[in-house]
Structures are given as C-alpha cells and as structure tokens.
Image 1 (tube, one colour):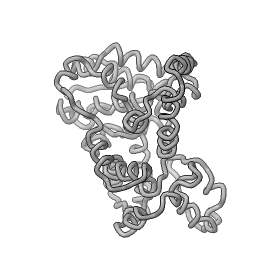
Image 2 (cartoon, helix red, strand yellow; image 1 turned 90 degrees about the vertical axis):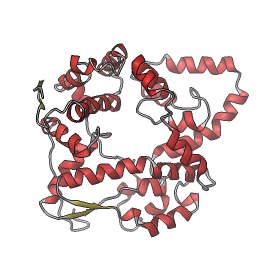
Image 3 (tube, helix red, strand yellow; image 1 turned 180 degrees about the horizontal axis):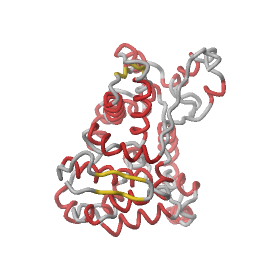
Image 4 (cartoon, helix red, strand yellow; image 1 turned 90 degrees about the horizontal axis):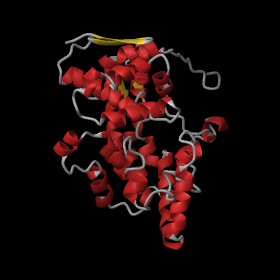
Length: 343
C-alpha cells in the first residue's frame, strides 16, 4: 500500500480448500465453528506465519466502542416501538405486519422490516437477544425434535445475556448492550481468533482489550461511541481522521465475509445433502426433518439461511468427530461430491 509504504500479501481460498480444511478446523476449535470467517481467518494466519510469529488484531473494538449496526438499530426500535404499539390500533398493526409478511421471501425490505417494532414486540428480548440470534426462539421450537425439546426442558438460551444486561451498573441502553456483548459474544470471537491463529502456529494479540484501554472506553460518554444515532466508533474515526483516507473512514462495516451461502446453492450443495439432510444426520433424531428440509429448500429458492445451514453442517461434523469418534480425515469434501468414510 503506497500511502503507508506497507508490503501486502494475499491468499486465495478456493471453496475446495475451504471445505477440505473444515473438519480439521472443527477439531482445532473443539466445537462447531460459529462463523464461516473462522476458516478464512485460518488461511490468513497461515500466510502470516510464513513472515511473522505474532500479529495484532482488532478484536474488541466493536464491543468497546459500539461498532455493530445492531446497537443503533436496537436503540431506535426500543425508542419508537412502545409509542407505536401504544398509539396505533391493534387491527392496523396486524394489517401492517401482514403486508410486510406478504412481501416476496427474498425481498430485502421484508427481511429488514420483519426485524423492527413493526413486526416484533418492543422489548429487549425480542428486539435484541432474539432478533440477532441464528435461530430465534420460534425457530428453535420448529427446528428441534420433540425428543430433543423434552431433554432440553425449560432451558433459556438467553439466560446469560439477560443476567449481564440486568446486573450491569451501566446506565444507558448502549452501554448495557456493550457490556452484555463483552461478556458473551466477544468471548466467542476471542476463542475463534485464538484457536484459528494457534492452528497455524502464530500468536495473535488484541491491543483494544488492554485492560487500561477497556476501563477508559467504558467511562467514555455515549456520544463518543455512537454519534448522531448511526456513526459507529465515532471517537476512533475522529482519532484516525488525518491518518486514514476518507473512503476508509466512511465506508460501511465489512466484516470478513465468505460466500458459503452461494456455495451451498451451487457445486457444494452435496455438503448440505450429507451433513444436514443425510441419513446419518437424520438418524440422530435431534431435529425436525421436515423443518430442516424446508429450510434447505427456502435457501435454494433465494432466501438467506446461510448462518443456519452453516450451524447445522458444523454441528454434524463435530458430532462425528467428538461423539462418534470418527477419524479427523474421515470426511472430505470435493467439488460436486462428498466422500464419507466410516470411522
């Protein structure tokens, strides 16, 4: 990069490489991979290990400084929702919700509006905890088989989140969400970062989580985190104003996307057929087969269920290794087919 006189490297990860490494990385993680970006992170770490032994990463900045869109979306929904539900007659609310639900399933407008106070009760559980879950409470009830639900009992998936949200001494809604995510979601991200980098024999460090910096950001006024309602990580953007180009400072959050949803619809549909719809997965009787098959069909038709299918694929790979005792190299994916060897 000319501006900073840095030497950049890139690695191209083919879908074949991606899926071939997946079982090994599930083994390194010791549990199902929550994010497809974990695999991409491993390949980046492997590339970095050729040149250095330690890297610095940005984990924690979003949870410290309000970097996720879900923060301001939740704030707006909880600000407007109670008034809408109080002032708009129930019949009209039902009509509006019905109109939204009747939009084409692949509609982005439908997808966004269904996650607002126009379709959801205006409380923290529905607009925050449940709204950003991979499987909502309602979906969980449809996904799980009767036997699984009986064994799970009255397990509350949001117990930890609710406890942190309700017991923190943070006064503002934003800071309560930041604290909750720091104690829950961030733990998952840190494990991903650590496990994937260590799998490539490289150490990653997280300067944003230096305890003095964390304590400092926790005391910052809310306006220095979210500005004018939608500018995230405001103070960090201001600090870097004279260093980074404006195009970088003002662009949307990108994350670390992997087109696994498109791969599931294309040449790597056999991954779904084996690990989600296959007889071996179905024989466990953990999930409602009709619901799972319908989920796959809806994804094929254009709806986005990437995260849900990813979770089901990873869960089955993890079960085969850690419950069935299958050898690490027993399952491999190749373009257009899945080859499965018995343990």
